[in-house]
Amino acid sequence: MLHRIVFFLWQLWMLSELGMTVQSEALCKNDSWIVDELLRVHHKNQLPTGGKVLVEIELWVQEISKINELRSEFELDIYMTEAWNDPSLAFNHLNPCKGNLSLDSNTLLKRLWNPSCCFVNSKSASVHRSPFTNIFLMIYSNGTVWVNYRIKLTGPCEKDLKTFPIDRQRCFLTYESFTYNADEVQLKWIDVNPITLLKEIRLPDYKLIDYSALHVQRNYPPGRWHELTATFTFQRQYGFYILQAYVPAYLVVLISWISFFLDADMIQPRTMLGVHSLLALTFQFGSILTDLPKTSDVKAIDVWILCCMAFIFCSLLELAAVGYLTRNNINNTLKCECSWLCWKCPVLTAKKIDSISIVMFPSAFLLFNIYYWGFFLG
Image (cartoon, rainbow, N blue to C red; front, side, top):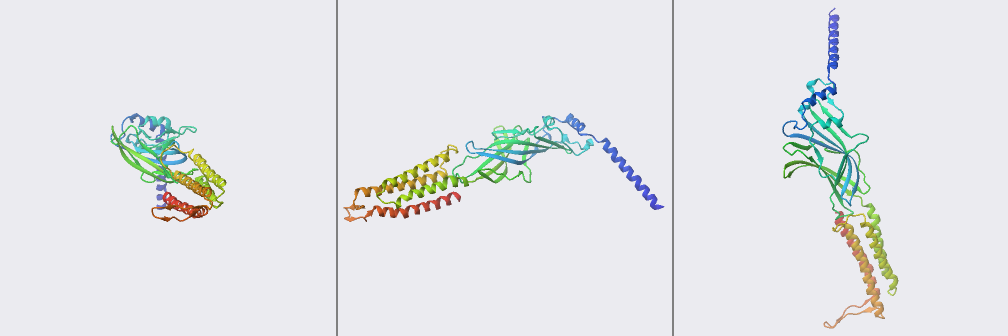
């Protein structure tokens, strides 16, 4: 009998709880009603807390499409998130049907206070419209406002081509409030992973090797502003330039040395080898520089091409010395007499000069390569 009474009381309690739950759900307020109530007391032009507002920022990189050396800029697509707390938008006390509001961002966002942040160093920026404006707004019951923008951006890069084509390029995005200074709005990156790559970034000429988030305070004439900077570091993929510039230059220099193995009296073919090698290297140098910005900085590839030209030019000077000996001395010998010391220098022949050049030129070129690659790759 006691068991039946206990079971009956438990059923009554369950039915009462179920009825209260159904009644509560029936009485909860829908999103539209809550938004109307919130906007009645919300002031768009008034700081939410009456003082300093903390705005947390997060950046998701969707795609980096290209880097333009001529204009020193890069293009990317990002998701930019802002989050802050506005006590006037808290709606826990309004018996909401759910814990957050996700409504039409285009109309609602314009009626809410926002920190008026932008990328102050961007060359161009636009919110994607495919097929509608890509802005997502969510308001939580405790008054936290969460806004996400999908943006296409063009930002600046450092123009430092001194080590081209073994160079690194650094590009920047700087985010700050355009309207409110540091006494009104405090910007900060979120504590964990402020910058996230949504996929592996692949570019034809570059590889993304590092990215970082920096927070500084910048002084302007009207006051202090919080400034958030995202830095992206790219390593140039120089395989193309190895094949198109360095390997051909190696071959041209080696071809210019063929003249050392020809007879001393074959002046015309030896001259053609040297001159054609020099012209080929000059034209190749010009074609490489076509796609680069005009800058007075001496680049790594400039040093390479000019030194290769110097080696070819020196081979022409060697040819001139051999030609002089061939024309002016029947025995192809050269003596330099120093009357004031009364001794004679060693006899030089055209063939001996060629023999010395066969060893000296490759050795000097090898030493140059060791120093060049050690310096620029190191």
